[in-house]
Length: 253
Ligand SMILES: NC(=O)c1ccc[n+]([C@@H]2O[C@H](COP(=O)([O-])OP(=O)(O)OC[C@H]3O[C@@H](n4cnc5c(N)ncnc54)[C@H](O)[C@@H]3O)[C@@H](O)[C@H]2O)c1
Image 1: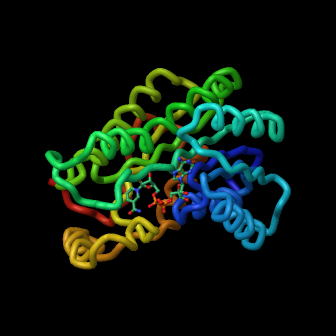
Image 2: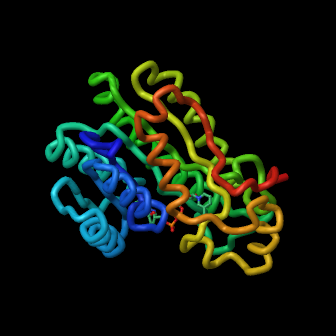
């Protein structure tokens, strides 16, 4: 119960990774604010938390589009009204703004480029702006961002890889600027079994597994375990770091 007395806000909590993080933190004693753009998926996660962690009290469920600053502000206001603070912020929302997963740089449209940067960076920016001042004031905070091993470079992912590199860099800058009482770290997952992976061609998945030392895809729960560690006081002397959780995926290039 290392997250007892902590309030954690998890974005993208309707997806497998966000849901696993929320469940893990709830089972470690945290009060939760869970949010997603999909009210339906969010309700499923809330039900799972209720069933597995055995509690409904201490969970604020609020649908929000994290790319809309006013919705993020309303979410943070609601969190404050309910719990008085947010101690741990986990920014899970991210992805590629196109159904075409792998596309050479020269073919990527302006719309896709801007959309991918938006989804990987804007929500995190709005949430940190809204929540970090309270963390600084209370002299306690943990922020965990989610990048991708692609931050190191990946063919066909110029928009996604470079925007995730920006998440890694933003993590380091925030760690510097919010120190000494707020720690900011980042998880860079490899291939994880989520909806995003369902649409990757089997041959591409096999190729990735071939480059992975542990010879398999990871699970959302394996990301959740690391998020709970970085969000807890077990990680009290870690800030500005990006931790690859990839089963030993070889360098992307
Ligand atoms: N799945 C992987 O293999 C993998 C690998 C590396 C990194 N990642 C990163 O992990 C994170 C989660 O990925 P995932 O595969 O679980 O994604 P996912 O699409 O399965 O889930 C993401 C959730 O975020 C929600 N969401 C999307 N846009 C939103 C918005 N504007 N506002 C609020 N909620 C929104 C979706 O409704 C969904 O429930 C992303 O940042 C992704 O880039 C995933």
